Length: 174
Image (cartoon, rainbow, N blue to C red; front, side, top):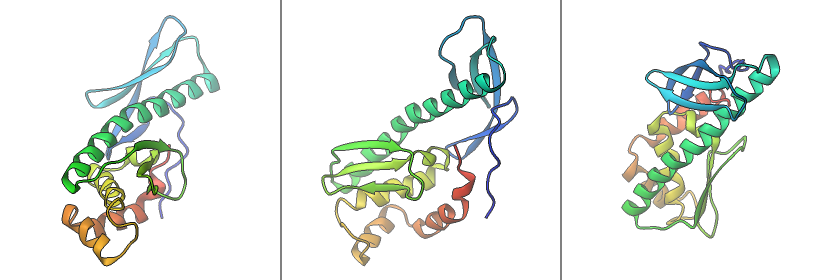
């Protein structure tokens, strides 16, 4: 399985955001302050203090990208969860995005949904599959044929989406 190389956080390096690659570009600010990140056109732009160099600059950019992933990712994932909860007729108690290594999502007995932060790098249809999977667990707390039938109703291609995650999870590294 291909594994993505360790990120260097240098200009031109590509970063995945919902399945699309954005080359990193840097703009320098004159005053120290929180490094910020945004998508501008086809680029992921990090605004970093020009006085930061070497490891300091790298860690500033890395932290800013991670913060940005979490802040924008939770909004998009929440939109998706809201949509499918409405379709399926269930309600969640809260949504979290966490750093977890092995699972993509979970649904607790009191309907707390938790999603792997790496999902923010995956294509939308893959994220939709994981969201649908967890939302369906609010109806069926198991992996029975009824559960998979409900998943299939909202994601007819769920088997290929599951395979994609299995094959490509190592490419999604933050």
